[in-house]
Image (cartoon, rainbow, N blue to C red):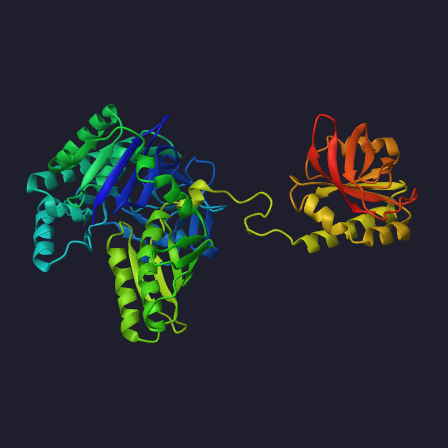
Length: 560
């Protein structure tokens, strides 16, 4: 597998993509990256205790309060051993309103929810993550082999202070003792700086912001499995070379300058567009349907265009294996967190299920974010858990549709027409005006032209003028009472292609065997003649504008 990091310096900002075999698995932009709060350290102030939730709201000075659960409280009193929230039963036993706390953001806010915070500070470096006052030692699950794990653990214990904890990162396998010690000392100095700053300011205040896009991501992404780091500008290459020299000097030779638009070269925009959509096609011709709720993502696997060639069992296995590989990529590309439930194509053989689960496990091993394949449920669904930290790609790039409010659906034409009739009937019964103008979508207007409006006019004694425009939203309807015929001109104009007009004032000004002329507020509209049509003075007509020209407009009669 070829692994490439692409760094594009564009207009006023940089973007970074990680590609595996030319497929995007991660994408970051400076402007969106700056929005994230994860990793920031604040001096916060407790503003509200929530006994029913065993939590507290803490003001960080960012506009909305953060949530601190009692299990995330770990306070080291001066001169005493650290106090762990696991030894107590309530947040009130540890903190009180008005108290200032040193906290770190561990999860960005989503929707109406504020960010989640902890007092268990973690400071990431190149080879380790320092955990001040937490004493425990953890090893990356990607460090394989008991001998290798024990070796790097013993090395870390030589430099770790007894009162601090540490997470040993995968990159520590490639570090020399001197590099590992330097990482420890730089993080300890950073922690001392944060503590000193916290004593000089009054909360809420930001004490430490995580690194900018390039240093933060290169710190986490650089490893020997990176084949190339492509950069599109010379000045950016120099910046990257300096960062790589300080983080992983042995990889300096893999930084390559390549002129041009690297995003387009690797078709990254089109891959991102697919990553924002619901349907994702897989290599064999099947597809995934991905639907996200707030804390749960559901993925449905379908055979799509793939019909196989040998047996139904082999067809299902092939689709599911390709889908499992694509699911692993989509989880990383979309940064999907929380619970994930996958409905694969049904399979009867246990060995086939084991192959699919193993492919999911292989994909999870590539993920920088902790991902667990939990196995099959009694209903034949596969459960996956992926740690939720930052916002997903969809939450960063998309917002709810202002019309459907995020449902992805609008009312059917028949339902909208029924709703308009009810509103017309209600208004007609309470107004003294002789007429009502309804402005709405052209398709909904066509649905209204079924004869029911004549019945409604007969029952209420009101004239109903319908004006439909093709660019109006399907659920947008405006009703206005009409007191004079002259007042209708402001509703009719300007004429536009696709416009629907139903009005008793529509009367022919000239007729021939081939065409009929109408006059609409001074505009000339020509429509083809209809064989056998009888023009009546006391009834309404409906037409649709088909084409506009300098001489006037061409249309088509819809009712006559």
